[in-house]
Length: 554
Ligand code: ATP
Ligand code: MG
Image (cartoon, rainbow, N blue to C red; front, top):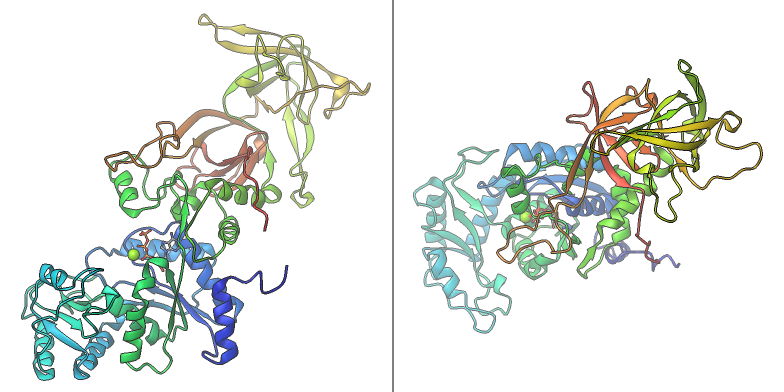
């Protein structure tokens, strides 16, 4: 692959800008609105902006876009900072709040008024909409657009001083009511809102609109490439107008890329808020969600998310990624990193009738056959073990190679055993499986070259540790799609299964929050940081071992 072909379109733009001297450095930023938790889509934007700054030896700013006083919340500010740090994006000492620039934004608006490029209007929101025209008709001049500079300066100052009620007056940029781009038809750039702000309190009762504030924020911070998502493409002429009219010496450049969407996965803040409020999920970090906090809690690694974002690529075309691709990334990441221990989720006793009663022997096992750095351990073995209920069948179907009367299987890392039968309770439920072992097969190999088709895992009953294990499926019923006709979500009633009585081998002792393991034959699991480290360990299933995902050809 040639070097050019491997560059994304933003890198091509940046390299051209550097080569032509448009900019002599690269400075990016991530500008979240603190009105919710970050999700996997934001991770793409964070890693893209941070990655570009790093690649071109530039800088990356963290900036809260908190110009809108209605929805913002300090809880979200803290969660967002934590998530970005966890993802590995480092803003060093450059953490900013757009609200810190309110003074400069006000001055910028005054400058536009002085240049005759902005005016105060008394039109109501509905009237402004009506005057704006449509895609097919041009807009009409605002009847207040002929106010003099002096009048506008006086009125704007009065707006700031609280003389007017919300909606009574607005400041509009004077651009072009006939522009084919509706965003250029004298957009509102300041509005009156008598509201407290989480950062500035009651210092202001006028607030700048996003399209006016954002380019100013970028220019103040010396941002070179202001990367945003596609829906802002039609706003770019306004972005350029603002930086030009305000005469910033090094105007930033807006570049749009396509948002990351995941198929059949809920990312919208509105829906997640509802799931949280209705108690359907256990908060914004419920492991079934794809907020960064939820992915972290479930056991995903920052590396797996980085890899996933890279796999998705950066482009101008909207596309939908598969959750299976994210699962592929975490499996690949954890395969060599996580120790592989034995855990039985849905247990039944296996009794080895010819094994001595009071003996516990220690059997050696490697911790990860793909990574010798993880070392080895000794696993206690005895007469009574736990095995998975589904690893025994009294009347097996064809091709069932696990335990059934008369069949011989391998107990992983231990011995060959031959099933002799089972004991059932009054309801016909199996309570014990019985077998005999062959002492000559210690370690899991027969001396005479005898083969077995099945290998099952087990945990010695005497030394088993108790655990709760939570199994997750998509919170959405994928067969039916995400939304019902009335706009409500199609919930999957089986998205959470709690296994209360799981048995772990003693190697798990001392596991702590976020520790990740492969449970052999089952999948990857992590200790739940909220509930997981009490008397009983609690694990979240990150992902099962099975995958139908095929890596796309590059
Ligand atoms: P949402 O509507 O999903 O809550 P948002 O766009 O309102 O997201 P912001 O806080 O405004 O959230 O977003 C911060 C940055 O993240 C913006 O630059 C935005 O373009 C980017 N972003 C948001 N969603 C995605 C996504 N799905 N894929 C990539 N970037 C995204
Ligand atoms: Mg937004």
